[in-house]
Length: 375
Figure 1 (cartoon, rainbow, N blue to C red):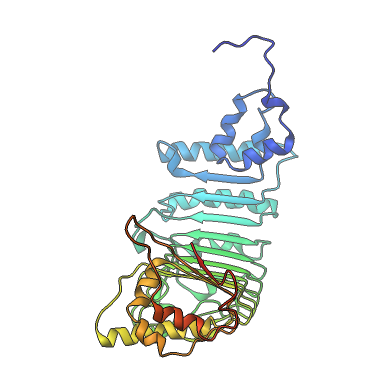
Figure 2 (figure 1 turned 45 degrees about the vertical axis):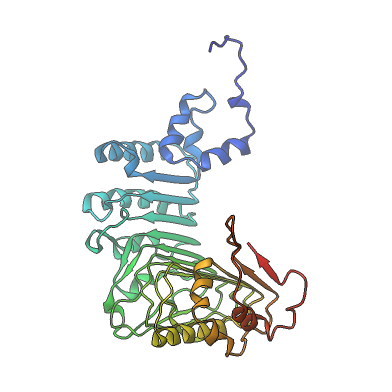
């Protein structure tokens, strides 16, 4: 394709908000590459407020180190250097000392701006062994007493309760594949304690929270609005407690049997999702235990208005439907029950009559339009 010298440069005439929005979604390496698009774009990458570094996107680690140094030097070469609002940093070997030094350089630059509100750090690759996971104590100094509102961590290892000091105004916390050493507690694990008085959103995905020998796991948050627990959590045989008076949304997806919920205080709960990836169990003793744990969970969710299940949960409950049918329905405000609709050419999946009886027999809105929704 040929262009004339008089061809209109449309990129240079994009609205400022469109250009800024586009650059926000590019990692810093690709932001730098936009400098060749036109004269006007030559320096735009220097003014992005979201730094995104991915060591694995470079052919070699020395190449990444060279780029990182040049980028930070260029960012800071003027008096109008940007105020960094968000940092995303990924390095599957971040646990190595030399790699950690590079992150420290970035954190020093970001810290000098003192306006950062969102930090996302992934410290290892998928399937990393515990010895290859970044220790949070190596990072914590950069986060202390900042204005940080959102913290996302992937494959990071926590060893001390004191790691969480200095997060008094943190509102959003996302942990993926993180590990918590058994030395924290002898018998149980209190995730919150008094460390996050302002936290509103908590996501725990694929974290190893409970090691063998622990008997309880507790989450408490006075300002917590959204709680998501999913992945390979070792909660089978563990007693779970949740105390969140302002919680509106709760999601639970487990890879093992439903744990026992001994105390769940969620007076403001509006919607909940329960999913699983475990196969139904046989045997009367196991059926009784699974049924008891489901009942304890539903009692904790008794204030929910909208409740959704995935197919695996329905399948597991179908195995114990006769036991559940004899239980009193715990739901007092349930307005909508969302169920999976699985169909083939020959049949449609239907909810067992015993489960319908369990969920609907005490509901004041069971006959209202839209109470049962199939998705």
